[in-house]
Length: 569
View (cartoon, rainbow, N blue to C red):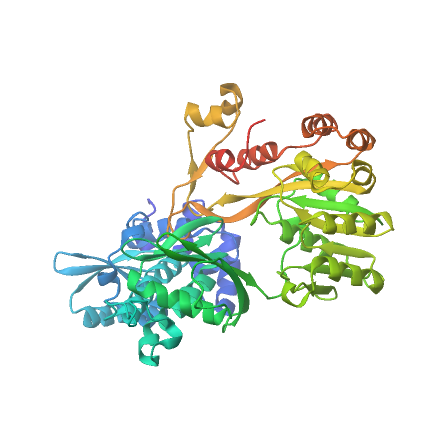
């Protein structure tokens, strides 16, 4: 007799389809009561089944249509909002679209008659159920109900705000001189902007004036995305409130200002670095968000290739010398150095850091934050550190000759020094130190390792798919057609999990220049960065571009990301 999935149990369907075996189903049946889940979700939790495989089996067994992933990217907020958020979350359901005399809804469990009856009462229409996986549904609910909340809150905050208050001289009245009632919309809006940024995992908030409105963007995974556009009439009030919170001069609108805000939310404590600069349309604010929580990174999770990991791990355990990590702002330099400190800290070692500001808190390590306004500069802090009997010192950044000079002296007197420098690659970092004013013989004797790094975006695992690059992309990436033919290129299509970007998270790429006798001799002789680079490549240095290509070959990142983030030598 032929197998009919509509009369079989789900476990039998899965076994018949060859997705799981009978032993795995038996194990799931025993464990499902512990988890409080149905058999399919128990198999997913045990790692025997994917969400997609479960949906296909349920489709065979129950005959329900599987939700179209593309449709989830562009749902109508008015239709979604017909089901109240608490009900949608609790009963794992979302409204997709109106169709004829009914509403199509996506459910994790379309057989739950109670939920279907209640939905009919809530919506007042016939219900047409479709199948959806639980994580996809959770991400979709988060995406759309967050948009509904944000839209409602922005409308609530800006409602009726279609004027700009001015004084007798036609100057706009700042927030401090406005009444508390006039403040309310602005306060709500600023609260909303900061809270949503923290929830989104943004590293930066950009608030900039355009001609007709204000543009608010968040930097998430290294890329900016627009989140809201309040009316331009609110812009001066928003800027003034941020100035008040940052203890800046609200009357000064012609000069750049820098400040900081300490925030405590229900989720975490956040330090916000605020930079305000005047533009032709008004003042622009950029806020850098620094999580003050416990540092959670480890060297093994940053993205080192095994060979580079072995070199880095060996050199950070040396008793003295300088280790420099270079790269632009936001390339993960501080994360790498703090992960290195975490790796080597022990009860016998005194580690002291001098930073501006302290970005990560490390248990058991002495961290000093510079405060220029009271005279606690890098120079003065580092001079006092020498009297604190340190074994290892982390200097947040080499900014000038004084800081570089102190770092060199530390390393020459038996200390291990970690620091960062802004440079394009590892060889140019060496010449940059000499440009700052340090004598070549001092640079040569003290340097142990120079490492350049960048962050590339990782392809979203939920929408990863094959990709055929264009001839131009292959050429721009520095590959020959023959080399490209042997690479299995990947790209993220964009889905509800990754907010249609095709990326989820970032990973480091590294270029390690170990200072061997040959490179030391070149530095003593004042050689240029090209000669240093050639010697380093001969000694086996992997360039940033090569490191990015390696990540691309393994399907971690895309060819477009390699082209965007690195240069072909």
